[in-house]
Length: 395
Image (cartoon, rainbow, N blue to C red; front, top):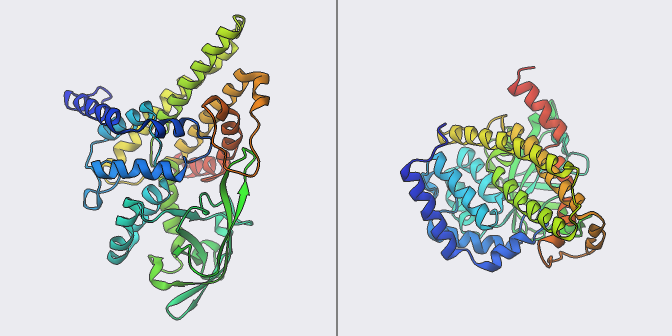
């Protein structure tokens, strides 16, 4: 792929910059910068989503018939990079970038007409029901049972680590519809209204002091069979398809670049306070290593985006992005905490709430604590390396 932008692409870059300058509110930039969770606050994300929907730029990854932009890979890259540089938040991907591709690929026409417009508008706010107390990285061992009862399934069991379940009005779930044979062969994919009787959400407060994950309980929850995506007992196929988009459906290099700019600002302030800071150059060398690896990640993302533009899905290469992104993000987090030194002890999380950080610096330690879980969610690093070995390297 040619990484030198054409005149048309440079003109598009200016158009994006002008749009962001005129339409990205300062309070959204501030809320994004001070956020320590995986996703920004729901209200911030939906406000920005509405602005992008009005412009027609909310879902560049979608086909044009469903509201996509028909942008080239370079335009998608430029848009993503400029948004991060301007301080815009990432839109909540659960519905937009994870569920929507599954509905487009495997849903009925009725499901597409019912769900896709509401996902795009923000009328439906989704969460993901994959992990269970006994089924995390070994997702095929899930036990949430869905027993057929005429034109309904009766769902019993629970899901855990469910991000934003306390804010969502819908959940897409993997359920057990058959217990015979291979575990993967008895899983189905259901869409469930969170307001259905029998659904209960219990909060889990993270060690960063945030309330973003939950445990969701299902007690004789009746779900119409028409809410099933695709065929019964074929949900494992759809789940793997979705996970490819979760692990590799977007750009992470820009986000890490943004974090590095904050790290450099922190290092500059540390030198001003203490002229002897990093005289041995250890911090500078660690930063240089991160930036070198980040350049490799950028090139890999561009190659993947080119494949997506040709109509493909991310494929097993998405696991490479997941492993690399997590490693670099955590390396930046760790280096920022090291630069803070003892000052970080003054930034202990607030327990039992969803605290709003006063400024970016106050979010550094909570962000570090929160991002330790990135090695696990979306598929553990060990699982991703197994996928890479088998599906990419052919070992």
